[in-house]
Image (cartoon, rainbow, N blue to C red; front, side, top):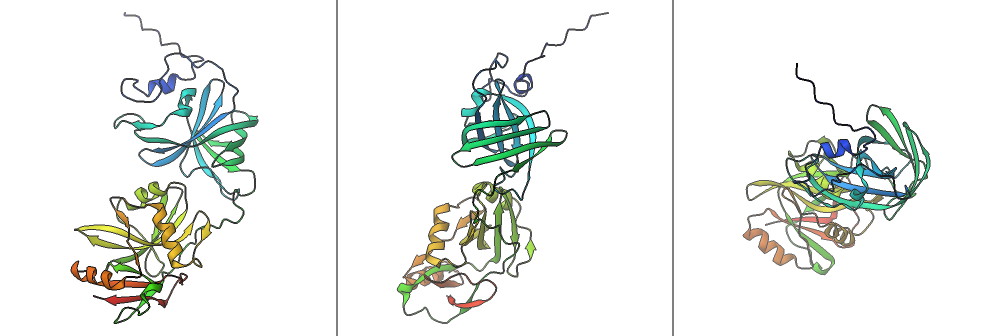
Length: 339
């Protein structure tokens, strides 16, 4: 009988699982050859945004020579009213605290990894089932507790008051503002902004924690086109936003044309003038394979209407630069002028 080969000794090797999942010849991630050796002050934390199969954020805490790690699908909670799932993953080497890069396709965790926040933390309690910490970062700070629920599943809870006490959640549903139809452009064009009418299907997008849900022109929940929700959610990351637009066919492809921003980072923008909402929307630079920020042109409706006719579009929508957003009804502050 051929004797069995002895199993490789991994006792005390905190990074054995990490190394077993990675090929140092193929991944740009740090893959140290030696076992983890306790050093440092056990006070480094990093949150990495990981665009893998599904977008998530990795929380890593330095402890006894490794980075103890959790994958947090919706990011760290900003409010103590909401707990977020945190899935315990393998310990990572300390060098990972500075890692950013593209993990190749076919490798474990394939996708883009960027540092979302980093800093120091203090430990209030550390056990096998509960970890209490105080985080000091540039984007997130405060007291948090991680507690084990079942298997590798934990929850993370913010113990401090909300990071932004004035923040409000996204509305469950909002009926969009609609233009009235007019035969001619407004006379005082300098007081208006002009957009193309796309002739598409009205749809609002509620983006939060990297996920997206949609409502239609009557405020009813609907499914978006395949791939739009996750990819648009990944574009905005943890920033909560409510977008208004329509699903139009451009060059034979359905594209979500975004032309208003109604809620951002916990703050409703319904009372903010149209010009400022559009400037904030432009600042998000939302442009992707399935979505585009619709262009707008202040003060020159005639040229926009001529361009709409040349492109075979239904017309233009004139919007008063100083107008708030009025959900649920037609408003003279928005005018649809057919081509």
